Image 1 (cartoon, rainbow, N blue to C red):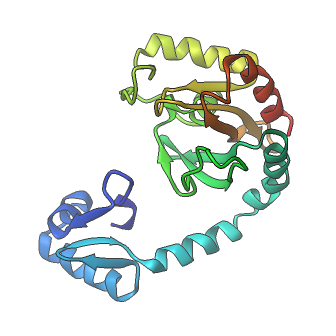
Image 2: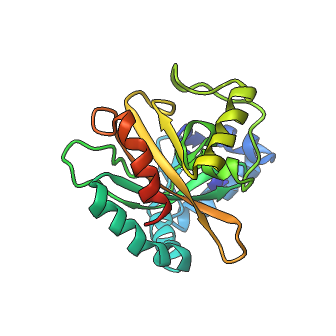
Image 3: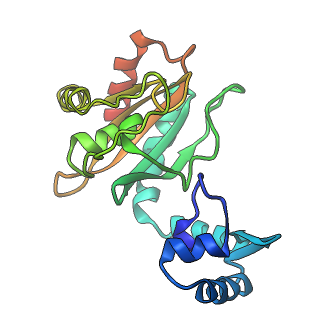
Length: 221
């Protein structure tokens, strides 16, 4: 029930909750009431939203996530080199989950609290990295977010081949107009790609001729 909340569904009624977890409405109502008493859900009129207790638990989980801690020095170094927003994303089922961020040092930036945000992979640079290395499966449906979003499977396949050849991925206005990102793979001890490290910023600062250099910095932080 808790995992059914996302950016598209920040609030849900009992009927919606019942449908998403496949139970009777009365059962969903009882479950929601239990979660509300525990602080995991909060009531807003007749609808529910995530409660403050989820923030505490999420923060605790990130602190105990050794991988995030081990990547923090590399993220901070990349932040000093670029001044832009730095994100670390890991696979989350068939999508990606942003688990750590270093905000940009610029007043005008693309920082928007990415931690905990799930994203469809084909429109994001870090998602393309995980797709290219087989960490997550290629989506059957390529949803369009902007005019630049890749929605043709053949075009995406060619893009992923280029990611493997170049060692980094780019996304120029594909997830959101004016947003540019560059990402490179993070390999685990077994040699598999386990995460993606990205730099993102506005298009007027991350110009096309700077993306290759940003890719190199992401790949060797």
